[in-house]
Length: 116
Image (cartoon, rainbow, N blue to C red; front, side, top):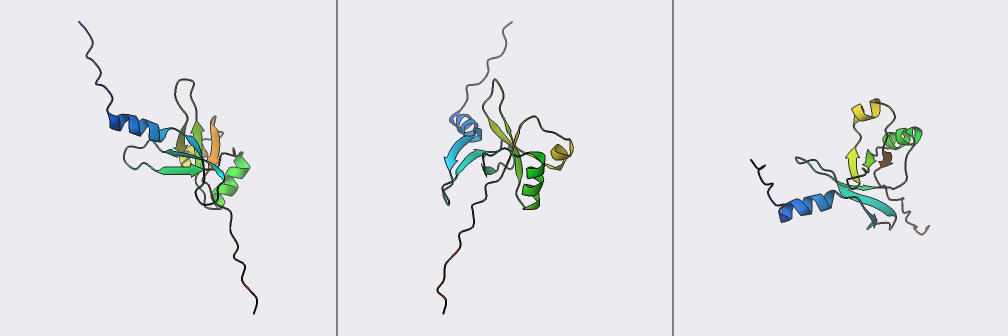
């Protein structure tokens, strides 16, 4: 008896897998290096643009207090890098074995006005 054949992946399957892979791209607003990817959630996938700088626990707290979301950058030996959201349960579980990164936030651009 032979095992049933697996269906061939469709173009949509390839596009979905490609969108989930982490890429390094410049921010379109400020030009800073960022990591971009789509979260692998099938119901509500989110486009993520994050700073590539790893955060320690204290820096993660500061980022969360500033209103930024934090993410795990997962990279397996047999799978491409992915970005996963760090929810409150993930954070409460303690030290994460993956690299923790935060949403990208463009630096403020001050507008110079003439004094009158």
